Amino acid sequence: MIKATLLLILLISSNSLAYTVSPAGLDLIPKAGKLTGVFVVENTGKQELKIGVQLKTMIYDDKGNEERGPIDSKDMVVFPKTATIPANSSAAFRVVYTGNQDVSVQKTFRVLFNEIRTQELDTEKKKGTATLGVVMAYANYINIKPKSGKKEPVVFEGLIEKDEQKYLSFKNDGDFLAKTEAESLVFKDKSGKSVKVLVSNLDGLKTPIFAKTKRIVSLPPSVVKDLDQKTLGVTLEFRK
Image (cartoon, rainbow, N blue to C red; front, side, top):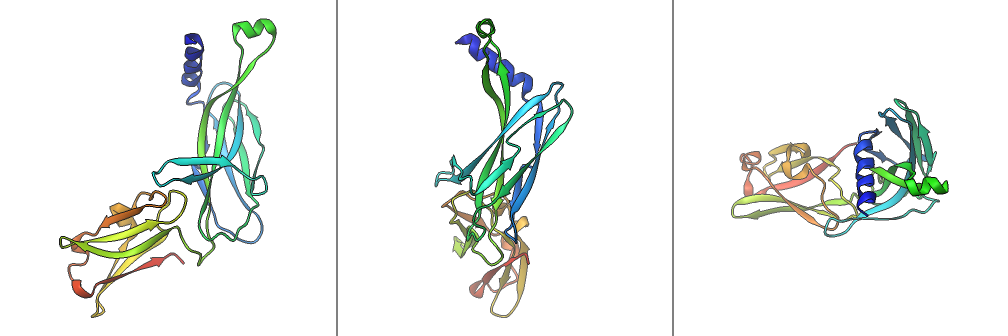
């Protein structure tokens, strides 16, 4: 048992930097025809390696734990499924989404790139057999985005106030980790004065929100200090 564990550690240690996969993820927006994207695996090691690809569905539960499941072959395919890549070379893997494109909320899939090695142990060499094992895997992702005008998973619930401090309330109604699609927020009072704030400038919205959870984002007082606090309203602006 100790020898087997040591062998696995040595295999992982010696190959943990043997290859890279890019990009980390792809966002695909429905349009006429099939949706397709390409991942590139680069072998940075000194030996050839064999890569296998697996596709999985992916959602997050209400505690933020990732859950993966089998994928319907009618929804997404990848080719090649396996490839042998020479040292200092690369290979492209094309993923094609063939499922329903009329999605109301974003769908997310995991694309797992596994390095596969043949382990020949002393006892197996005598028998002329070998054991096939996965050494390391990259877990990349693909998002199938809703068409323009479709409901996004993260919704804005409104402006709230507590102890003279204003907050923004957002909720992720989807089944996966997601960020708001809004580009900016416009704060406006009854007199017509307004202030626009980019979402990217709000610390509380820079990271994704767990599925089925809320996030309360603090609004710096300086942002709306020149507006009438009693008649203050906020709207979201999205990219066209």
